[in-house]
Length: 403
Image (cartoon, rainbow, N blue to C red):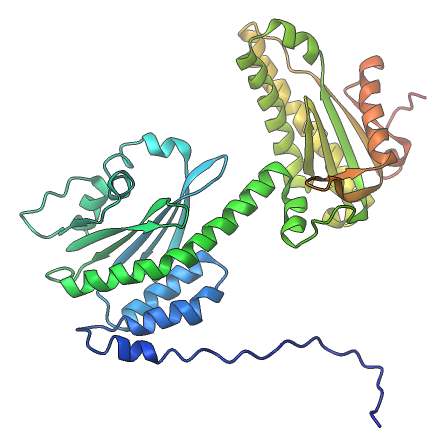
């Protein structure tokens, strides 16, 4: 008879035996100099489990140095899908053993730093770029290469790193070894690049997914989507301070202003509201024409009092920021940007709604409707901000009852 216990059982998973990669040693037994086999084995076995790209690159470079590869500096340049950035750049150098990470804006592609660079040439030609930095016969014709040569670099090679989509990126390697890279070094690095393409593409796709979800649905909703909460009807009831704002006279402005000026007004308004609400734990869920829906969940601030204070402080900052913009607009003879905000505190349903093939992750409920109605009343009552009695009960600021 089996003994029954009430203790919870820990979930178990089948034990997977690690793959025996010793065949790589025999595969590369005839190679000259440092061995590529343990590097490829690491990429296949351990490297693919590393979640953070800088850590992956650092471990890769440390492993190359450990087996005797003449690696001094490494650079990775990858194009990315992001509304603010065109490229993602990682660099490693042997002296610090540290990986620096930078995001490069879209205007970077028009700079002299990018034009004529090895990365630019790879994307134009799709071929390896080699520059023996210490050779008097080679012309070091780009600032990035001159920088390396001035610091003791002897050889440089940039390899095309091709993704499955055909996108060309660049993996750049430099050495300070006298005589530079050997033909054997170059051949091994060419093989290594082919093995690195898949894990690096996986990193880039994951980062792009996060960036796009954060941009188009918000960070909170984006994380929930990536966690698998994507079925229609899935959702939670959350407690939040709710912000609903709307531009004044926007319909009239659409009749008399060019579209470029309308976009300028909208972007300035959205930008200042975002700068005010996001640092305080608010999340912009929707741009509804010229209106905005923002939530300040109590889970992000601790309690209702903190959530309401965050929303009220954000409103003050947004109005102060727009006031500064309006001073400049007035001097240029442009119409002022005016908007109203309705603030309410309550429970909302946060989850997936929509058609089977077209879903929206949003909040809904009576509390949202009330915030929207309060915003609408700011027009008739000529007040920039109106709050509900539920919201007022959560703050200590003096308020005026308007009935």
